[in-house]
Length: 516
Image 1 (cartoon, one colour):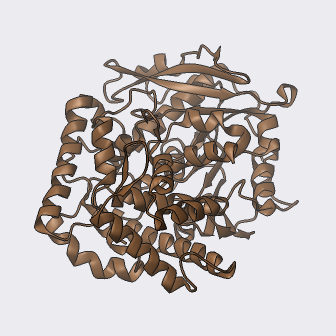
Image 2 (image 1 turned 90 degrees about the vertical axis):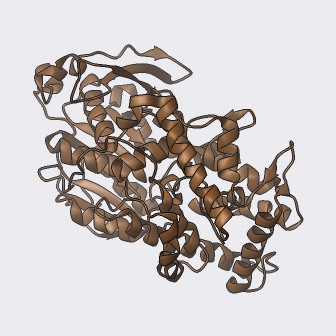
Image 3 (image 1 turned 180 degrees about the vertical axis):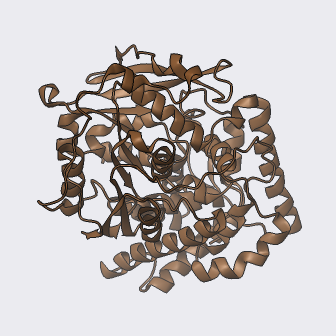
């Protein structure tokens, strides 16, 4: 199975943008002697809460959010932050906030800020779907507060391509095998990067993870909390770890679910992630075979061949998918990987593949649309574009097209099925001419205990990443979940859920290395 241009690198989108789509679809279809610590510092003054890291940020840190009802049980508001923290008196950005109110107001502990990953997924959607994402102990005791990070959702969204161009971009031939196809891939990447600059201007220089973490501290102050309580999934773990590095003394109860190795290079991340999706796909096919009469074949290897042949067939001739649309090879790839994020969604892939094997691409296209936040009338958010701008600020490295084939052997060793997908994904940031900030090393020295989770067969954020993140954070505490799918919490494992909820609600830090 091949992949090249659709999204600048598959390793970007699969880090978590899909979380909101999966949660929406779901609507349709610690030990006793662990050390405890208070949830909030007692006796802290309002001045302590809003004390800015520098005097020129005082007006941002002292702002009050004007919350207004925006649905049953929801309140919405706006937070002002400087576009450029080096020039806070300049242009301001408005970040959209959404709060799901605690179910038991008389037992409310405070606000839990959440981020679903991406980068680029709108956190307001995550908070609005809190009833499906979090357990009752968390919902009872916390207001769940989501924000659309700068450049995403409705928070001054980055714009790079028209909807028609995004459609073509995601549909495109996943693996260039001729000079003409390579030239097309390079042209798309160039058009994407130039479009970001032309349509979004200087904003594309100020959507980094470091700046988003600084925004979270302004949000903490506006929420009136001396310490930030935070739950970040997938890329949200990178955002949380960055916050812990910048503001270790402000870390409250932090859960980083589906940890990302923040020290690894983009190449190394792609290699590990390729292996993660290979493992997940093989687990899916093995389950199909074990159930008997698997439509893909009677063995894992036969199933992989069936899928590869299907994508190659779509590559040669796009498949009709209804509504005047066609399934391209890029769409087919995303349609296949999307359900691998959660074992509960494997039946979705069964149904979509049954249609595709009968020359009906509508099922896989629907899954691909969920992956990229595309609705019947266009894209419901800008996650496809925001991912590119954010990732290329965080790490602008790239591999020129002529050098990508040199990496085929390494990537195919990591993933015989997906290897070239991820190898071509390294084209990424070649044409993104951004003002890249200095990278920071993350260890969170001085922060309170931070809980990091990993899942043994997580395709998007493999277990080795969580292990690395927990090791890199001086106060990291690791929970291992044995299972399939992306992230560990609220995935049907009572051991994981009880440990995390006891930590968030009661302050009981789990045993480091807890295996569930």
